[in-house]
Length: 157
Image (tube, rainbow, N blue to C red):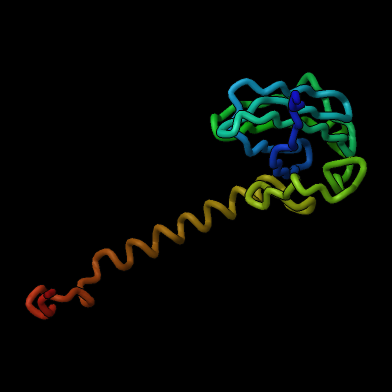
């Protein structure tokens, strides 16, 4: 009995900005076949560690510019940047045109930006928090009041 290769969809996470949509294929695939069309992204590849065929067609909510869209294989995952055809249109309410809840599709909250946020505000918030974190570290580095001398510690048996 010959077993046919059954394809499974890879895990995909997505986020968007006003001009772009970010996809991350969370699979380790050496030579993926990724194609961009106006309203469709296709992924196909034999992925590690199981050497199984991962394949998915993503019908997009709105049109993209296939010529300006690209991907990079980072080894354990593949990052895709889709350039929206109409960059002045509102944010997409969903990634797919069928608006179904797909078990393989998740929102990438680390990259997500709401429609009312601008890129500048997002970057400034990151800087604000990183500066504050640096202040917290410096504050406690020079404080020796909580240090305990070795002679006060009980012996370990």
